[in-house]
Image (cartoon, rainbow, N blue to C red):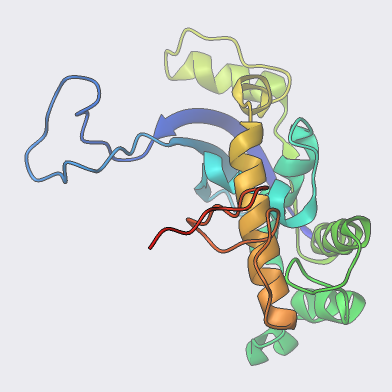
Length: 223
């Protein structure tokens, strides 16, 4: 039986930045350090009342799109995946066999392809990962939205003048937009490493190592 964790809030933050591009400067920062990557903080509470903050960098969504061919506009699926992934046990974790929920997840997902399995259709790779997420929600942990009125009452109690949304993940779903070029770049990175795991790969226009431009024309060679 899976534990039920409740989601209370989602708040946007950002990673460390030098602010050089914004016209400012901070001591001790590298001049080439841009930073300020969007980061989501998801507030959630365990069944025993202990609060947690799950930090999700914006790039995590891009990587899941690249790895499993998830639609970049499907934030519902992306959030479901990212929020429950931490409870996918590793087959190499011997102690997972002594945890009934983890052992059951390993049993029902044994043999499924991962994002690195070569020669698997994208649809099958995604279906396999969604099966792992479903197993986690069935046997380990399931994230559900806390009652809206309770969240609103807590806001009022602490003196916060705000309206609790019906869906606590609404800020993520309404503010997150994934850049197609960044998603495509990460997809190509995944495809290159996936191909290299199977056999030595000859770079091409579509499959190539990082910082490589193959082009579509013959390049002249000068002495």
